[in-house]
Length: 311
Image (cartoon, rainbow, N blue to C red):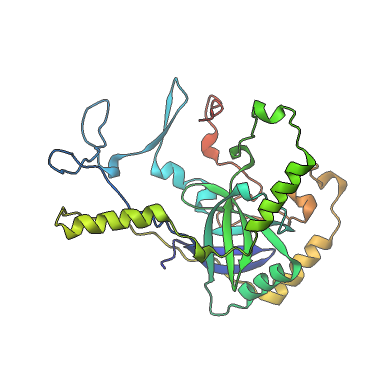
């Protein structure tokens, strides 16, 4: 595997340097489009609607359109955002491992220790194991501020990005509001059916039959000599160095002492703030970013964007 990102888990005043790797991969066969008459590859061009020219990636910027006006965001604009420059995975709260709704889970990443000593990494891993807690973290990856769950999988720390609360749709179906009568006999038979299928989950016992059949179909066509020449390109990811590592015991002592100090009444945040559930005091990151910020500054335009409509 090749790391896609380097940074540090900020655990109180302790920094745990890590490398980040994608923990999953797509096994689906990649298919593209061709002309049915001669097998020629169908390619899409990045053509400008104003001048009609085909545009290289080097001359393509991102933009936001509110329906009346377009705001162009250059690479320099996006790189200037403090959240995007951060290489810190900040622990903001610890919660019971069964408190997270699985619908919120998005991508999974393995964290590899990235220092001469793995002591801080092992300490955090064992702490999560012993307390049966999951760390809620904030981090920036690929021009997005993300919420994540840091947990243990075997001997490795696993970072799972989470969807934001407003990204999860509510299920509002009229049929669910109808009154339905279920008899005791029906419940008993249903329970018996569940029991007949019960057992330990073994992922290796299940295979993607469609992909297996697709492989067989491709192999058969190759055996008949029905093939065309193809090409592929692969991209590189950038990596940067993590911050300095503090003395482990000293950082732990300072973190505990700081969190034990009672806060003045005027400094307490409103109900629902993660600080009330054990969040470490806010501190500045390498680029001077405030850790309490949730949304990127790029969303601040002259007109407030309209709410996104569901698909």
